[in-house]
Amino acid sequence: MSKGTCILAYSGGLDTSVCIKWIAENYDLDVIACAIDLGQDQDEDLGMIRDKALAIGAVESLVLDVHEEFGTDFIVPAIQTNALYENKYPLLSALSRPLISRRLVALAHQYGAQYIAHGCTGKGNDQVRFETCIAALDPELKILGPVREWNLTSREAEMDWAQERGIPVPTTKAKPYSVDDNVVGRAIECGVLEDPANEPPADVYTITQDPTRADAPDPQYVTIDFEQGVPVAIDGQPVTPYQAIVTANRLAGPHGVGRIDMVENRLIGVKSREIYEAPGIMTLIAAHKSLEELTLERETMHYKLGIEQKWAELVYYGMWYSPLKRALDAFVASTQRFVTGQVTMKLYRGTATAVSRTSPYSLYDYGLATYDASDRFNHKAAGGFMELYSLPIRVWSDSQAHLSELVDARYLAGTGAGTDADAGTHSSENTDTNAGE
Image (cartoon, rainbow, N blue to C red; front, side, top):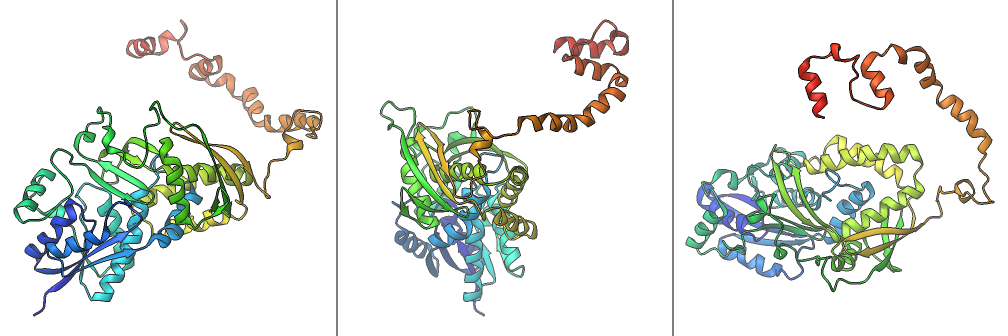
């Protein structure tokens, strides 16, 4: 009876390198290692990663170039949505997982594999993202999570296990960072970073430069053209979405743009200290958002803010292929019809700031906005507007405000402090608490 086959999402790092040997030993499966080229570290030799998987014991090792697919199908929607989880994290790892999952499922079908495996820990987000996306695409496939199962209780133990079996790994006990990277940026955790009180060591950063250094570059201006919310040119040079993120990384990285140090709420229920470098995506999102300020009417723009947060949350939670996320995609796409124009960004000392924006579909009307002699706003009409706008609050004030007793009285008086007359209405405990405030 022939062995079963397992498709392994392979990065060449510590966890997935150990996974190849561990799956073969513990499940008696043939392992096909699949590394996905998402534009990660340009110095990384993906050919060596392929060879390394074979040397460890994979029966086949593949490297798939998905650059343009990643840019068009995943990065563009994130830019159009201005997607930042908890208003900070630009979803760099979360965006890649549904694409990797899609390719793993296709390979499982191609090779007749019954299993897909990943190298995610039992308390991380990525296990949820991979397994939820794979389940959405083919619920019949079995998923293995070796890191959740083995008794290697630390990264140091993994390194020892790997050394005993002659498995080369890129981490060391002196520098045990766990890094996930792709063209969108880098996610760094573990080691000294696990204490939120520790300032990140300088060596965690590789694609951005310290913006506080004495020789930081002078301000740089970058012009980005968008068509229907898609970046199509940078400084006059046409770009694909993938090329846009590569170019924006190259321009913004030396200015230290996109360094993020945050304690985020993982889906699994724990807080995690994460360091991110994402210069390009943070620049493009800032530019896109600035163009939307010019081209989206107020109610659409305000409503979209809530959609953006929910969309980012769903992607962070691994729900890329869910019905709700697809419905939100349709909403976002409908808002991008007129998000066309040009934005100039100023890059300087860790910031990417929109300083100029133009659009043939701009809703900004100089004649309505100006205070100079060309002002054509009907100021007299504002009086009637004020009368009607304030009508409900005036009716409430006349009818009910004086009946709202002490709490509302203090609120309306602009102070939370109790008066002598209040004293008998509160317990001494509450009075002391108020006094302490």
